[in-house]
Image (cartoon, rainbow, N blue to C red; front, side, top):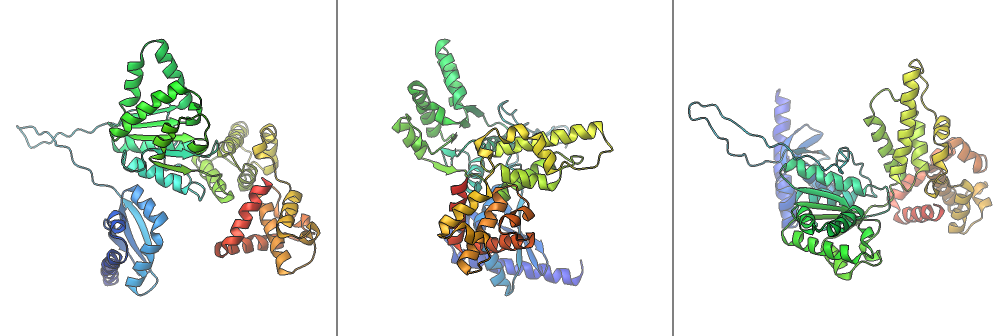
Length: 466
């Protein structure tokens, strides 16, 4: 290490000490104690300081909620702009007592093996494989908090949203995380339909004692799709008492539902009240960027040798706007075809094109209303109505600011909600070229960052045409 490195390291240590002291004086004490107190200096250089937080959950939470505060205090302490890199360090765990052989100095250690996952838990549904976007950020953070602090944080936790958006993935991820960090933990995951069927079967076989022992003697109980309890008074009664016993014992309860439990008909008020003791978080349909990130991650997981044109992922991200599970299924069909083709014709180097993808998915693309392509004419008409102008104004040559903005918004929506190319979109907007469309996309993306009302308008228009 040369003198410059020593000077930089020493300077960064002093900067962090100063920034940490300022943080302690300028933010709420409980916030500082919870999130900043245990941050440690790890290194860095003249342009960046490297810090670490204790555990994966704390690192993600700080990045998502306090990174701006952390960065600003570091820069103020440095007297210049200084980037902050926050990494995760392993959490300390108490070391088990290790029996020793009295006849020698040799130490014999024992390592607990993780309990096997319930068969109903998908081994791929981990936090690491979950793509976080604006539509699911709070749900992801809440699930991480539950996994990190079983029976303490957000108990019970209800995750609700439409089918195929990641509720089950997060529930499985909680189970993975808990067992990884506490191999002796007792996990029970079941759908509400299976819970009902097992309950009825237990009544018929007069084995309710065993049924209750199975679900009340757990550290974490995860029940999927609780809307299925609606109208089933006996099962609601059974779950009510199971809930009470687990909650009073400090055990964790995690539930999922297709809507807020207050909106589910025929659920007993006392059960709604119990669920309301905790936290309810919703998952919305992911935006285009998140859908594209999910597809890229899924394709990367399949490894090399899968030759798919990147434009195919963009096509799928625009086509499947409401159901991530169906979108992933469509990608799996395309990948399977690509692998099959490569297996029979190894010399083939042409990637799967958008046209070939449409051919492969010909049956499934039209099977559900969810995936119906939005028509550009519909976007133009809805945008014109919203901005109180005519469709001719949108496709015409007028450049007044109000009409130009509406035109750019319509182009932005056409790019993100249809499978048309930039050239095709330009042609539908009065014969404009693809460069004009690109300019419109960038302009709207930049304006939405600084103009909240514009982002609100785009969101409203998106909902009106889907």
